[in-house]
Length: 480
Image (cartoon, rainbow, N blue to C red; front, side):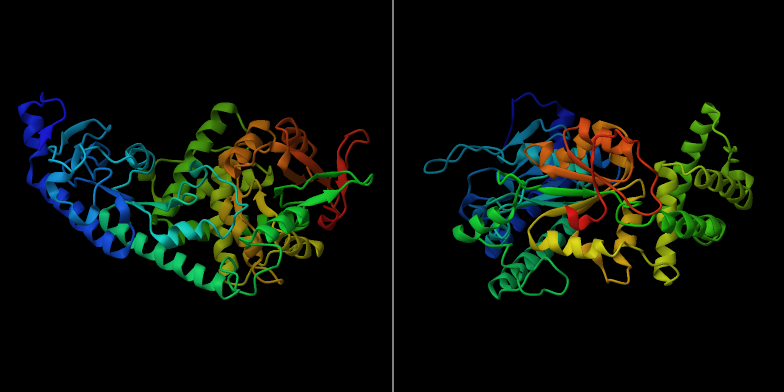
């Protein structure tokens, strides 16, 4: 084993030769052998990297052990491992071996491994070439790529025909998740072979217009995914549909007359019941930041929130007053929306709330799902609140028709950049491949500026539009 440049300081040399590093290298070699037996790293493909755990050092600064590239993983030993600094500098490399062995080379996956460490604070990363993980990416041949940054809680990403990258806060959680993912991929493939849809909770028969790997079926799907203009000319279908909720899928009255009052009436009881929880403490922290900013801006209704040592009751009383003022003003701020989502979650769980939708919505969602059109939600309500309203309805769980949710953490709905960010996340080639449906003219203008196609929803109770707004309108989502 040699250092990369032969210039390591005595302290650095001692660090890479520490017992913790030696044990982590032995662990990586042991796991490589196990993964080989599972078929995850055969033919020199796949790799693993593990942070050297040291409770005295912040995880972001811990050393990294990384497997080499292009070697037989089942024959790997501790001395074959690379040791890197937290920023990816090679501190220690394996010594060259005689022919027919190739010169040592750090994993080709290194840059992606480092991204997982830097962006997700991972403790380990596994790259598997398992057959099931490769085949799973081929079930949906028309699927587009997306940006992992749009899914901050994700712990894995599938790469078309190239397996999967999995990360976790430790090697144990990463290994556990890898085993679970491979089990799910194997189950999905078996369901697909049986003609059952692995993407829906009830695993019903596969729709003839989706999930086919056959060339003729792909062509038929492509035909379905186009619509005819009135003059007979063919134009590309909307690859994705992006829906607003209030005034588009759901009556404004449901939000104004049911959801908002429920949140306002239950703020105090919710905060008292969950005050010590990490989730509620995060809600309070966000509300403090929002109120501080409101006070600086002179926002009507904003009241100072006393410090923590003033006592729980005084803090909650001030929070109640601020939340009530925000709800009355229909503020579209993330701090409020996040707390409301947590309060509503309790209401849905107790059957005190149920999502309301216009009658055409479930039919339209089912129609688009059958045609292979992906549908996403973009609302000022938190993503959790969105999932709740679609999850608890008299029509059953409508989330099976949806591919994702966006809220104001990606940007204000009246700013065009927000829609550009969403298009980047969806992975479409052009923004025009996304159709946005909303009832708010300012949102429609912002989406159009970003290049999306737009329709404005005309529903009972929606605000009137100026006569020269210039957008196509629909009275029902079935018109899309």
